[in-house]
Length: 216
Image (tube, rainbow, N blue to C red):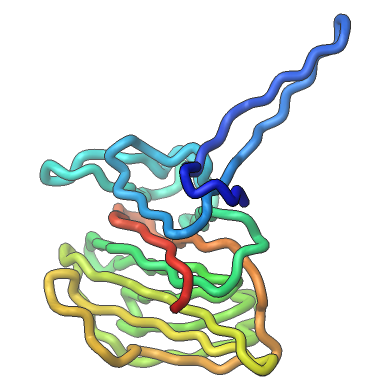
């Protein structure tokens, strides 16, 4: 990561040529925290992951990041926003889900290898790590509605070789609650990892107002 406070997150291509030989490499440069993204300039070129089902589009006069159904394969996508060496931060995003029949999506945040998962059909919030094995799994009931903006917040702290993972979800138009919605303790914590967003949905879901800040 760059240490220049004037820097901005960016991505590009570097071309090297020696005689008749030419090589290209993609390069990403990350500024110090805090980061914020509202998609008014389109999809961030330095984000990693996703495909054709992800795009920036207008929703009621506001630019948002849409995840739709995958063209092929499963409908789950994870998009990473920074280096895997990051730690000691909080990530936040606004999310809105649609509904089609009984189908409702799962939407979440990623922080240092932990996922805060807002589950539509189960109407729960789950904190997890290692999704294939669910090494960490805490969940609480959380009824939530489609076509309503919610704000998700995920913080990870490492202290005395233990990890504390805290998640918070609330309607975006309401004040932030003082208490965390869900908390998990990890005796063998993930110490680093990229922030990200995740969605599992055969229908449209939307993200807006992403931020990543250092823990205070």
